[in-house]
Image 1 (cartoon, one colour):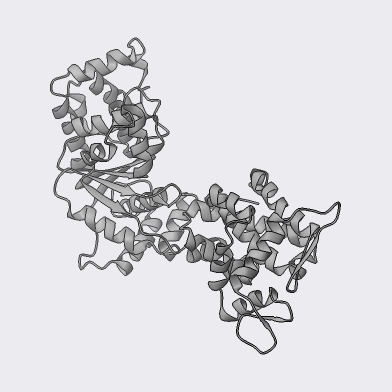
Image 2 (tube, one colour; image 1 turned 135 degrees about the vertical axis):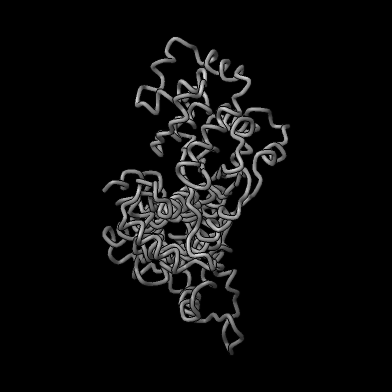
Length: 458
């Protein structure tokens, strides 16, 4: 079974934007309008937890901006026209088109083995946009300029530097007194030929080695100074703070440190995960309450896109396995297969401590929350399964009044706490029969989770 996570391929980026399949077009357009408003050198931080779709967002933003840049060769004329029409249809601004901007996407995690961030970023700019700037031939850049010229003339960027150690290369750059002016002249050359502003998207900084992450931030702050330059960092700020503390120590104020580098913070809104999975990958698992429990769990625990994709994939595997290994289980044990199983899977993927508490019978309230999130008819059905013939949740003549909480706790005790008796196990709660098969089924879910990788490419 293939991964359901939406990868940032061009086709996925384009189709998701043209159809607004994940409901982020308005956010993309507003962000581009923000970029259009900038009049000086600015650093923006897009904050979101891992798996929240930051990379997809910035790659889509870059794609839209490239559509409005005549020098961009990354898109066909047909693709540009489609993207432009979608922008104009969704734009709230009276201005018809955004400014022509030069864009570069830089994956810092892929490049954190490079000699130095300055060389790496400049090299990446040149390779990304195919710059051919005549001014570079007459600028005397020492090592840095030599590196740029090497790249522009399609020579190996490192060939002329083989005789120098990384320390000497960095030392030469730092000793170049006019390095700020030289880099600024290079950036100005790029912008003058290609657009009104250069936007560099820096992704995955929070995954880098601490030394490289610090170096990159410091060198951008120190050397890349230009009123027509914007850096957009897409990061998990909490994880980046941990990276900073690994470098400077746990007592270091990483939050205050990062505030020095980021001028404008942007927090991504949560996308409509139901639209995302039903519109793009067809999320409906079975067409009944199993799907509704899936919806409840991703909302209750604020699953990221990546978590939701993993969750849905395992639910499908579990549903298929249950239906094919024991055809009667789904029908006879609806409570366990439709409610307990998806809750158990979701907790395992999201919070291992809550999962441990659940499978020990100590976190039963999540079942009540899940049932209460269902339709009234489904609530009546599932709560009704727990009742004996002489029991009721409301006052009725000749019937014993019980609480929903006590019945759920009794079910959890029967499933998770009560031990087997010799080779056979059987407990009845209302009309629900808990047997050794039921226990084995629920225990097997953990096996599916721990071995889920084997299904990824099936």
